[in-house]
Length: 259
Image (cartoon, rainbow, N blue to C red):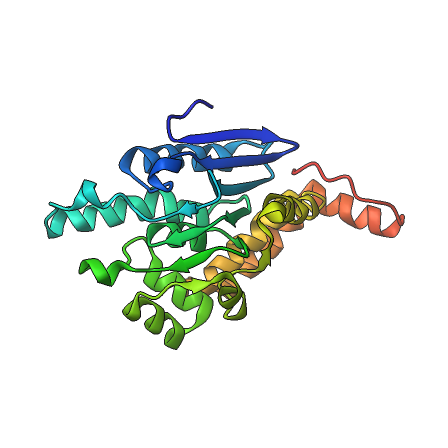
């Protein structure tokens, strides 16, 4: 897949997506968001892809925010459309993807960058990372799901403090409050993400997708228990369920096909 602002490749069933705008600290402009929308859709429909690692080029920034110049003259209606389109095509699309997305946060994850990381299912940060939502310093609020996902991850009080003060926090603080899953040295960032996805790759793909769907339904108040019950039932219809049970009974490693 050839993109102008992204580097993407599939290796050993993992799709590696790198936002490649280092001079702009990997800021999200319209073209980058469009390319992200395309690669997210590709991941969801491609059987070869079992998981995605999303990161930024260089050591300074994962994504330092959105490209403010592009929307500095917008009116209210245009602002709403910007947020809706971004949420639908990129941020919600990641969260609702049947494939697990891991954000490998190298350096600054600010504004839209932190919102992008929060849309991913798992976050790993380098120990030099800084995270924050500084939108109120521009007279704005987060518009790509930041008010919702930060609250889900760290609780109402901490979310209000972070968003209204616009303060950045360290990777260590982010791990302490549950905003990131793991903190590692920069040199170990991608390998830690690979370690997690290599475990996920050993599990039944349809069951992994069903579990993600049920968990996301719970945090979005979308009939989580009902979603779980229905997804649990559908698992019984899969070849992977039969294989998993046979492997358990026969005391061997399961060979899942994703069917």
